[in-house]
Length: 450
Ligand code: FAD
Image (cartoon, rainbow, N blue to C red; front, side, top):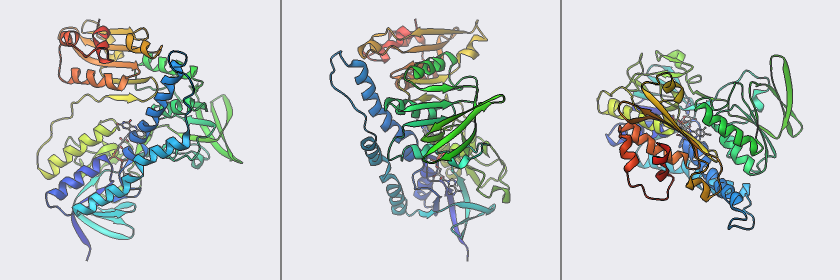
């Protein structure tokens, strides 16, 4: 007889994990299926390992600027040691996740799940049925129409390199490429970013992204725009990337060509065509409860869901909470209305939340865009950082902040303060008069608002 559970979760990342645990706590029978080491992208091949690398590089970067200003000697980055340090964070994740599930009585299936029909999935040749399903299958590098696609390394493999190669070509001018490029450049590697569009980091404020791009060039990062990858070929130990536009092509030699050109929801190989689950290339179509619009016993959350949320960890977590509240507790959810911050962990970084300057400039009677060059601010000067810029968008009538875009050493921290101000409708005067602990990056905020 076929096994039947209350809930089957496909994917053990941020969005799947919490729902599986919450359902089990309520006494449901639950199984989690994952085809990669358990724990998901963020703690193994995403946010966390990246931050571990960035924090080390940050120390070296500050050291370089401060040489001759109180610091002497060399701060040498060493990839294999740093990789081992990173591994201390990532390696325990799969066993810890599986142990936690098993301790809680959640069944664990290591393998690829495919739907056979609306109520049945198959994994490792075994068929399982459930009353409810959560598709939390995440995203993977998008398939690109290039010859030799198989020669492209995924972003996952960057974290597993035994040696950091000497020549890296990064495809796509998004946040993953820029973050990897800034790490590799500090290791004195030759780095080229290939970007199809007019300007890189398209989701971010243009003048802020272009400042970061110019600074990246000063670090030696070669940024090619209006050009795309046509083919990748292996030649001995090297890879040859053919790039170009319609009337011009060029060949770049590299030790590794990394795919940083966008991620696509993992919906293609799930057997969804054999079900009534509505989906598109943007993911499983869901409503505000993360419930499938066509099959009510199916939920989807995280990077694989077409729910209008950015493919970022806090949003995957938020979606998971909605599933718990609706599927388990029967509570209708409000429309999603939160501001979604995003950050690029380059050095310096950029971060963004809320209304863009482009939007604000369409309505000059309603909004004011306050810009500041932060390079002469005390925070920057202490470590001789000559980069920095802020653009804050003010609602003129309400005198509240509705958008913030920063390029700064502590961009990711500053944006959290602005996020709070936007979400809580804090009056700009309150931010100006607050007795901020001084001197801190946050105590620069009143000056950014002048
Ligand atoms: P995932 O954690 O990806 O989990 C999905 C799991 O399902 C995977 O293990 C997958 O293999 C498995 N799966 C897929 N299909 C099947 C199937 N058919 N059967 C069985 N298993 C299946 N976000 C941030 O907020 N901040 C950052 O700084 C940040 N940095 C990032 C850096 C990189 C390099 C990358 C790649 C991502 C980064 N992200 C960051 C994004 C963040 O990691 C994701 O948004 C988040 O991990 C998504 O979680 P999830 O639960 O949707 O899916």
